[in-house]
Amino acid sequence: MLRVLVLPPARAEMDAARRWYDQQMDGLGVRFLAEIDHLIRRLAENLRAFPLSHNGLRRALLRRFPYALFFRVEPEAIYILACAHNHRDPATWPR
Image 1 (cartoon, rainbow, N blue to C red):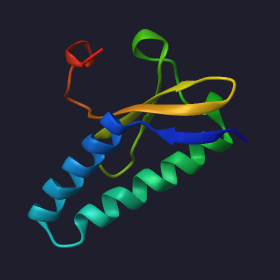
Image 2 (image 1 turned 60 degrees about the vertical axis):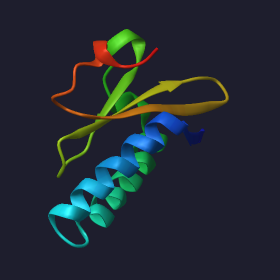
Image 3 (image 1 turned 90 degrees about the horizontal axis):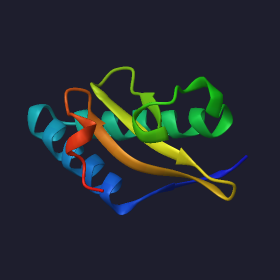
Image 4 (image 1 turned 120 degrees about the horizontal axis):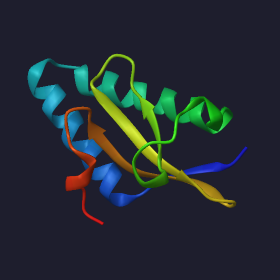
């Protein structure tokens, strides 16, 4: 099984979303991060379950939150590049 690395921009997006969810309801941000952890375990176990998306990245949708993880698979690891809200246009991402 490949190791999964969350790059700093993706981690910053996760943290921002967690803070926003915590402002909406106590504990909701923790549930958001728990779902991300669960999704990361799933993608590490079965990469092909997640479709190719924008610019050759794969996309993994969270089930209870309107977010997706975008990741690239390399021989040495899986790199999570973004944690984006589903209404965000990938064309606006920084390079």
